[in-house]
Image (cartoon, rainbow, N blue to C red; front, top):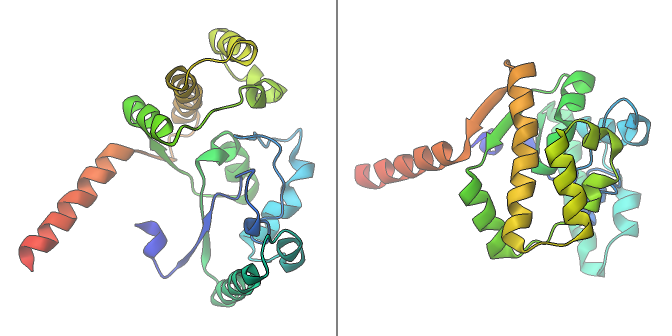
Length: 216
């Protein structure tokens, strides 16, 4: 795994709208799941993302959002890790499927190397169903630039699902279609990015574990 490399600092889901302590790592407060950052709205997020990528930890914001006093030690831990990573000149590794629609902006603005994992639709839907993650489709609908990037049939489905909520399987299926339409566009526009199938990585990891077991 890339995150295990001693040359990188792993940062978990900075685009997650439910992050609390994570606000120290990234003080940007995103209003939507799958927020699309682009030239039109970058003034709202550039400074915060730039701080994150340069390991500038916002301790004050983190402390203002703690739920329990014992979380202070987590803030201190994150702060020290950011300081250490900055001193060692490590590379920030952002793992965040919620940043999918902002990948182009991250690449252009910060010269980020982009790795996109492609999920099998059945695996994606199964994961969402198991965790019972309802999706508010108005989070897509309220983002004009994101909606305009989608083909008309997906725009109509988003509007329909916003007005008439569907079951969890249909919700997950539509989210998958929207995300993977975007991925299909990236594959055409940015062939230099790395695109990998999630199940292939899982199979490779399983084989490595099996081989280590046999060897031992």
